[in-house]
Image (cartoon, rainbow, N blue to C red; front, side):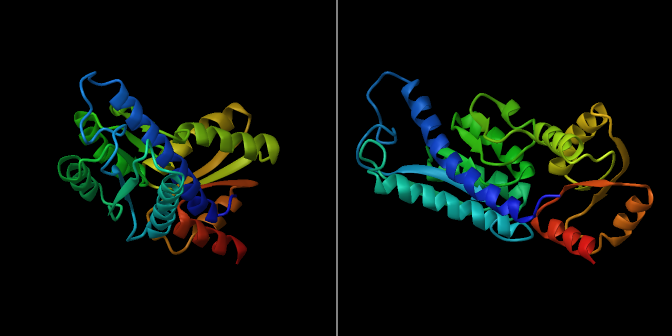
Length: 262
C-alpha cells in the first residue's frame, strides 16, 4: 500500500508542470491561428498579462488535494514571472474553487471563457469536474490540461483537451506489476473509492494482476467519508488475501491505514 500523502504530493508537482505545459499549448494555439496582426490577448504581444485559468477543489472533502494543487500553480506562476514572464508579459492566475462539484465546474468554465478571457486552463481537479468542464473549453478553442485527473475519456473530448498523467487504467496496471511481480502477492483484495478514479484503476489492476497469475479474492468499493474499513479488512483476510490494492483519496486512505494498523 502506498501512503495517502502521495495524493497531495502528486497533486502539487503535477499541477506545477501542468501550468507550464498549458502555457506552451496556448502559445502553440495562438501561433497556429490567423496570420493577421496579433490582438492584445495574444500571448506573444507586450502589455496586458496572460491569463491562465485554474480550478480545483479548494473546499469540501477534497480540500487537501485542491490546496496542494493551487499552491503549486501559484508557485509555477511566480517562478515564470520572476524569470521575465513570456515575451516580456507577466502571467496572471485566475483561480476558482469547484468544491468537487461538476455543476460548479461547468459554471467556472463558462466564466473563464466568457468573462475572464483566459488563454489556457489547467484543471487541478478530479475527473468528474474535469470532464464536465472540458467541452466548454473545447468549443471555445481554449486549451485545457488536466494536471492529475485520470479518466481515460478526458482527452477524447477534443483536440484542445489534454491529459498530463497516465490514465487510471494504465496506473492500475502499474500497480499490479508492483504488487504481484515485485512484492510477490498471489491472492489480492482490492479496496477502492467508488467513482471513475477508483473504477478505472481497479479495471487496469484487475486485468494485469490476473494476467500475471494473481487471484483477485475480493473487490470492495466505498463511498467518500468512509469511517471504518475493519469489516472489509477482516472479511478479505479471511478469504486468504496476502496483498491489498488500495485506490483511495487522502482522507479515506488514511482511515484505511489506521484500521490496518489497529
